Image 1 (cartoon, one colour):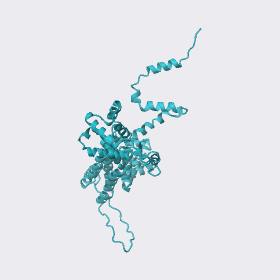
Image 2: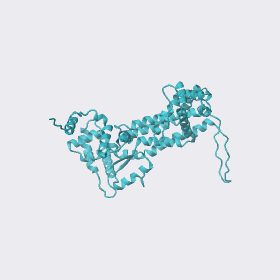
Image 3: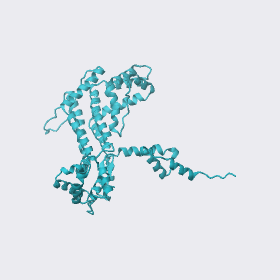
Image 4: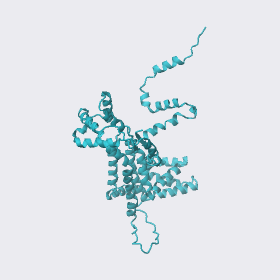
Length: 427
């Protein structure tokens, strides 16, 4: 087991008691790569939980969905006001998918407000429903809530796009690093005075649609706390509501986002540092021999067992093989093509070993989890007595359906029929 990939949960990635520790006890060269898609979910989760008002925002979004979807009568009222986009529920596990819940509010917040107001004034609904609709409408009729809609939509839109991009089958470690760096750059650029002004401008457009003043609600009276006599001084409270939102919400959420990105993707950057030069072997012709030798020796050190000191490859020989191999490769060849080329011609054994280990490092396990969920569709209550061999076969057919569609089963069916047909002799 050389390449490990988990959802980055503490019980899986733990170095002391988790699954990673148990595998490392068996083989210290079993590299762990956190799933990039799951890690992005955790990044957004960290950001949302860092701000009380941010958590309150998602709570209100969920309450509105639960209220409107709890009755067909209320849902029909909503459909009269909105277009294609409808309110969606939140997911506790897929944070990046919360863009689906925020998008209707970003583009149809006025229509949703009108639907809630209509329900609150319609006597055909119960008094409890009218009261709840009025309370939720007041939550929407708030400039601070509109600012949160714009803020979370801009963050989730970027995270959702990156999350889907990282699940591509053709994605390699250097590509992941480049995408994460661009995402971090986007968040850092957004966390600026200009970014905050752009957020306010977008929120003002929503406020104009809602016909409310683009002004933050007044702050509540601060409760004075008793302090020790020797305390140096009191912290100056923020009196401006806009500045308070900027410091405690806008800056706080974005700070947690890119700090969490750096922390959670540190292990991916560590692996990329040692294997990165193998992704572009063709370009090694421009690398000085001393630098290439250092890359190879560092990789040899990483691929050496800590206990037995056994190593997978020889760094010096790897350097020689790469020096000979780099000029003869086509520019369009990927690591997979280079590995197939080396195995076909039976040469460069150290390059083959390095590439095989490299290609076992998973970037994301999200597609694997989706494939595993196929079992719920295959093994239902009608097939509860299915054997393990048949279940595995059906799961493989379902998962690899693109390959199955190109297979000609006519010969297999003919052989099956001839073997199973009952031979009846008529007199």
